[in-house]
Length: 177
Ligand SMILES: C[S@@+](CC[C@H](N)C(=O)[O-])C[C@H]1O[C@@H](n2cnc3c(N)ncnc32)[C@H](O)[C@@H]1O
Image (cartoon, rainbow, N blue to C red; front, side, top):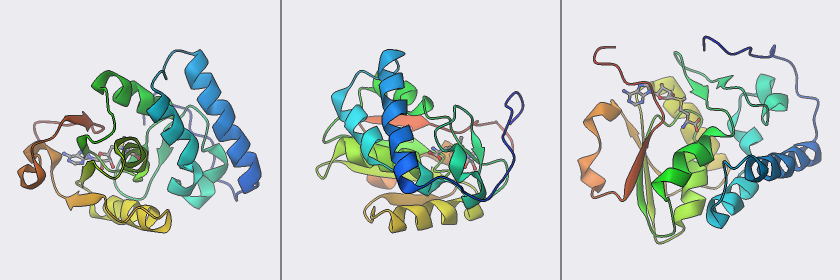
């Protein structure tokens, strides 16, 4: 996480209501800043509680424009504006079959699940087993039971569920790890 100033871990102080207000304000900011245009992505960002995908000691910072650390090696949840930045140019929409590389917290997969709706499919690949378990637990608790979480190296894709309409590479992929 070079180049970012990560706030210090602390016990959560904000109520669910505070965080809901921050979520609404963040979505308005994303629209005003031009990151967010699609009504479907907007509704998904309003619906998914990002704070529930963040480790407890960083929860208060859920809506800050910084990546936050996750369990696992080098894993982070990306900044809030990254999600419309990924999904808008892809034209992610209802009914799409979507592949994400880098599940991280599971938040990006949950937002995509809301966008594609019941007729679509979300598959997400995560290389770090500890991070994958964190994503799995967050998604289960948040009520997302039909996202296909795949352990392994996203560079290999996941042909078992292909074809896909679009994919987002939310991980830094190197030739060698
Ligand atoms: C920036 S985070 C993704 C954030 C995530 N989309 C979210 O919403 O929280 C990048 C993730 O990609 C994972 N990763 C890195 N290399 C990978 C690879 N080759 N295949 C799959 N996942 C990989 C990392 O372990 C990390 O969890």
